[in-house]
Amino acid sequence: SAGSPLPNVKETSTGEEFDEDVESPEIVLSYESIPVLEQTKLPRGGVSVETSAVGRIQFGIPPETIKDSMRLGIPVPQVYIVPVERFCREMGPALGVNLAEFEFPAYFNFFVYKKRCMLVVDSHDAEENIRRVFSETLLGP
Figure 1 (tube, rainbow, N blue to C red):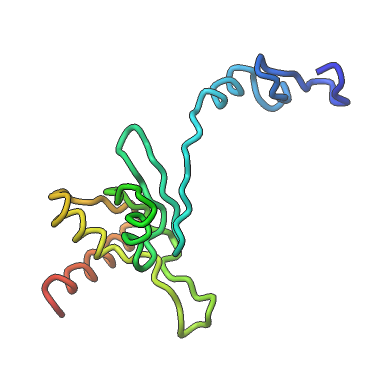
Figure 2 (cartoon, rainbow, N blue to C red; figure 1 turned 90 degrees about the vertical axis):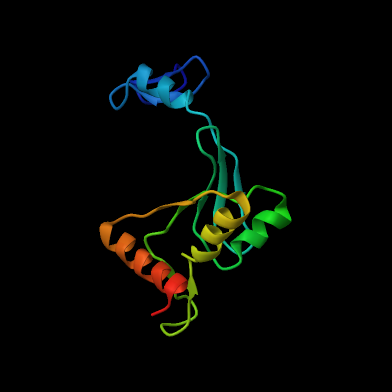
């Protein structure tokens, strides 16, 4: 723009500045067209987001997360993103909070909604570990 000290900084039609040396106006406008999704921070941790494609998605699955959704009056999600770090150990190495408490959301979806829930994980190892734990919760060791 005229007031910018940088020679290649321009403005889009909406007034956003961009550097022509780094990105084209088309790229900047394409970013502007991406809708911003409303996020709900849950009291015990985790973030819930409503999407038009699959409904509500939740990042992180701390203990009692279903109660948080119900108390806030938002639907219990069917899609959960499991964090890469599945345990928060801020209280010490032997104490921590499981951020992947997937059993109750899975049971809730299955028995109340009569649907399966989907867990999104970052690796095959994470999937294998979660499958093993879930199998033990259903069938025992």
